[in-house]
Image (cartoon, rainbow, N blue to C red; front, side, top):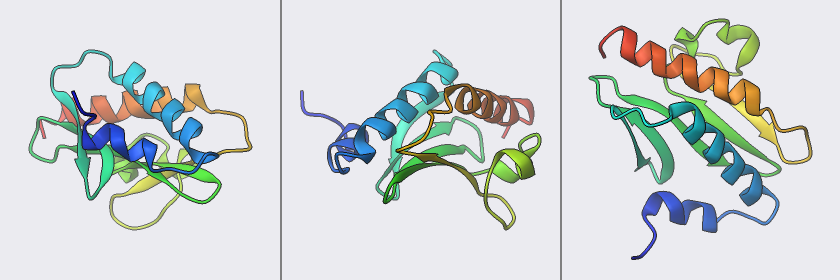
Length: 124
């Protein structure tokens, strides 16, 4: 069985970013658990998680130079978004996971759990 576009994305990252992106992927998967309303897909050529609701795009991973960005499509609506995430505008916010820094596994788990709750709570 050939790897999905979701999995192939990680193969295309640089040696520095790949292990961090895979760790972010694993942290998101752990936080999502076996929630049947959330699935992995590819959006705009990036690995993403979507909720089965109306505004389903939940989060995605994007490799960059020296860091990996975990983007939350409705990040501005997450609790304490202004202190936990970067970005401006109406909706999108992101967490930069630096390749040479401490891995924020607990923060990722908390943010993803909050995103899952947000999508599930309002029925969207």
